[in-house]
Image (tube, rainbow, N blue to C red; front, side, top):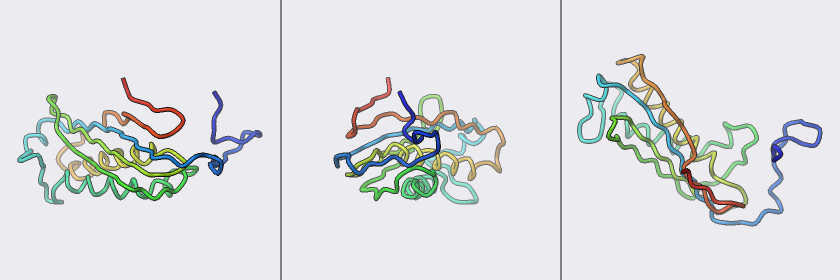
Length: 157
């Protein structure tokens, strides 16, 4: 296995995708945020409202905005014209906030970084909107859940 973002001399290099086939590509990423009981007790109708506004609705918008700008944020990431980006936020049985970002494009390169960026920034937005209530917030994990349309598909076990 070799690193694709290094040239033969070991310098950073954008991957040349000019010879790759155009395919439909979809990726889903997940971030989990632990807010703690004090904040979770404010949950009403699947939303937490703060002085800054509705936390989950704001995080959804931030996640989509971030996914659209991934190529500007990650130095060697190709800029892509997203065809779709959906951010969903739910609370699981353990009272953790689960953010899932699904991104898709028809193109020559994968969309995993856009999904990961969308989920990450949504999690950071939740943190930002709730930090005045607690310094104990934890962004527990961010990971790729699935991807399809490239050389090989992936589904997290």
